[in-house]
Length: 214
Image 1 (cartoon, one colour):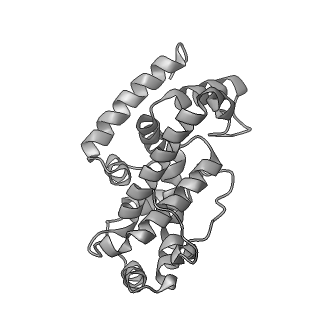
Image 2 (tube, one colour; image 1 turned 45 degrees about the vertical axis):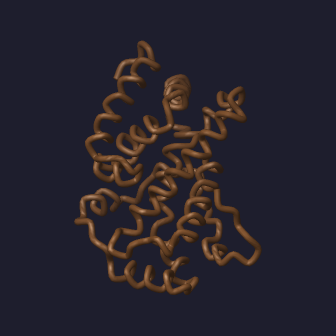
Image 3 (cartoon, rainbow, N blue to C red; image 1 turned 120 degrees about the horizontal axis):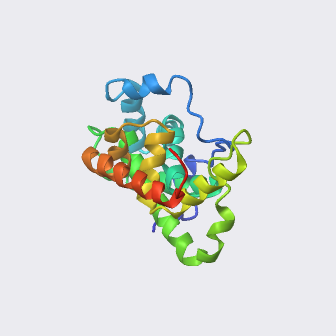
């Protein structure tokens, strides 16, 4: 894993506070998701600046894509803090790989795959180091005081027991409302695979939830 060196200009991507309720996309999110995929003039300019070594370019790219990157990370890891760590690590990796980024690609899709990989790496490390403590972190996701306690706890428990990618797919689709194609872009898998993963993830979730009704 890349390490930050003293004076590394990756410091342009400063930590961002995303708040404690990440699963509340803006009201216009549905419209944005259905818009044709294209590279905006602003993004083209920022990528050009970033690849030329101008820190303002990369800072602007972070500003444009940090929210969706956070949603990707948060669908994989169990806590808000781990999601922020994964986002920061992902953007750092992206910064260090800028010379290999093709400007003809969509930067957001590229960086989301990097963030997803960083989140998966972090989730695997957590499982190795803290296997006995996972149950204590289960109440953190999907915290909603308005929900019934027992049902919410059982749902959180079941989601935490799903494999990382299965949990990511079901949260990104059923909670965040992303399409199979968008999920595939984020996780670096074909859209058809995302659809199949979602089907299997729902089956596993039903088994874990036992006799709870849909």
